[in-house]
Image 1 (tube, rainbow, N blue to C red):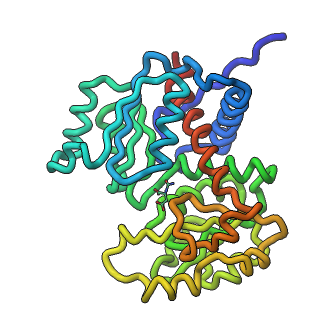
Image 2 (cartoon, rainbow, N blue to C red; image 1 turned 90 degrees about the horizontal axis):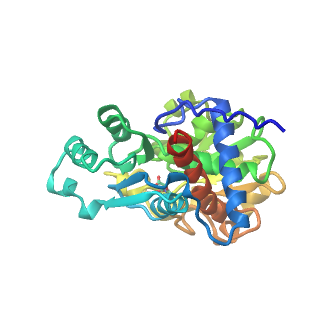
Length: 314
Ligand code: NCD
């Protein structure tokens, strides 16, 4: 049988969702699923796809699951890894991202994974260093790998998001997860609802394609998927809501809310979650919850992106 010609991946970086076409997204999801099934069968979870390639992980904002997930993905593909974290980086001594980038470039990495509190920093590095870059979260702007792993987690349970109602709830204003998800889910044909306190959900979000709700019960009614977000206190310089108790009373997702959604509705949270503030444990740990699938799928999506950006090109 003739071998099917490998499709080329047309991107040199993953900076945000906008640049990806529907076909690209399907290709990433398929690649992630293929890699996942290969690794499921293997006792030794390693392939030489990125042998001899160096990946630099530059995490200048706190991160547990994203950082660990990238590292595991890189190790499974046999890349050499350099890790730089906020506290140990010269950036805390006042070095600019440009100078840090140039210093790092002198180490000849093949790809940089960056998390930074400043929106646009991955774009800046990609433009000036001219090497592949993956955005692992830039300020309140985007978190494209999170949106892709969220989509894979949903598609493992329902065969399409097209025409499905997906409600995103919480601190939309400060959430790069929300921004990337709205863009991706709309691109794939979902109906997106956004819900949160008016101080954290400006009407401008409607321009991204989401329908705005301020009442949680209305927002989750009939939803196929409910995605909760963390309240990002570290990005708030002033009080966006009177007290945590008040927030919990109005926006904590409970078993009662789950009953208003569709039967077998899926519940998600990118983590880290504040139990009892954003989500009741009864719901977070229920059969409807995809929260641990999201963590596991993070490794497959990141392996797929690393492979598509570096491995295929030989
Ligand atoms: C998210 C992030 O860092 O943007 N977490 C993650 O990557 N798993 C969401 C958050 O911090 O609330």
